[in-house]
Length: 501
Image (tube, rainbow, N blue to C red; front, side, top):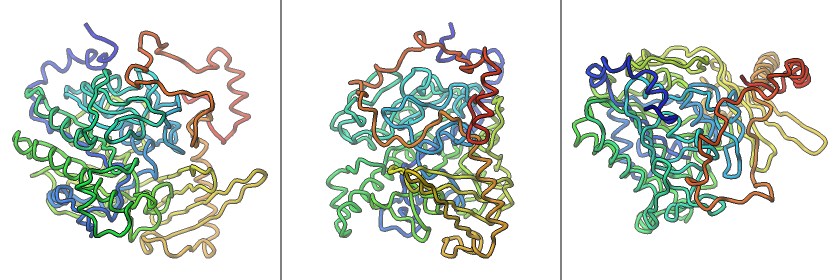
């Protein structure tokens, strides 16, 4: 009997049964996502941090040297999992905080659901960060057969508690206890477990979003001591956290090798945003870092490996958005797309597999509100041109500073050419204005502290509101009052969408 967790798979089961043999020949797909990894914090970009496993993965596949993500974590994860612009989803400006009740809409079809519907077994290990108050928002309801991890933006690495103190580590909806075990090690071990315990008659899709090297800045003492040559103690801890993550990547890659799966598995590795400079990350020679729309905030370490299918050692300058991974990986694996909502991501598989660089087409937009509210940045890349608007809001005024860069000629954003190109600035500013009108008016904005009345549950797995206590098909709030909705939308104009359905 089909439960609410597996309705997608049940719906297509009759169609997929004849395809089991063919499905077994399709590639496995593993996505490894680092959290806050700096551009210059991997060995192949010149770092003193030891990352032999990430380096080997890059050497054995295609390095994505022009991979663009959001400057903060939730938006990148949402774009990766939906293939859609995170602004449309209401999660572009600021991450989902522990005290927030917002989430990516259950009506969005995730990449995991596409693979699950195509007969893949699906697993996730690590940080979710796309909704944590309702059971229908959690990974097991979003296309993952097996989920081990935490729901929030961060947890303590040894205690596994989220901000507010609630325990946040679970396996398929049940709280688990691993106190005293370093969380990055647990991530690597659980990913290996999923691979070893898989159904060998079917291919698998595995998503491993690490917490490392995101805060809290905690690492094993022996690894911190390994980087004693670094004068700054924060940088020593950060390096140790990256080193630990690389070791976990090695555990996963070694498991694929020992199981005879290396040749039949697509492995993608990327960071969710540029490194935070205050935490010891390095993004040089790129300008800026996390929370900015400079290249150091939105251009990420990335690579994809599929032995025999993708040329090893290729360094690709193809312009790729994190949104493009959704249709590109589905195409590579022969997974049909069932998403009824239009994707913003582009299928880049031909360009990547053939080693070509070609125009991506379309504009890419970025934003991140500052935790201190002001100032913050929005940006658009259109071809070789990039406009950054720095917005400073005060109590009774707002100022906008425009910065224009030719990122083909000036990839490190050293020369602002806005004064010499007023018409181009005006055109790109208008594109940003129109794009920002796609944001739901009730979408996520900066929430650096909870409401004074908020309290954390003691256990986040147990606190999820069950599906049978939730109205699953909530329609537009004003669905019975079309005139009211129409008038409200006129009032908001291009400042946001009242009804996102």
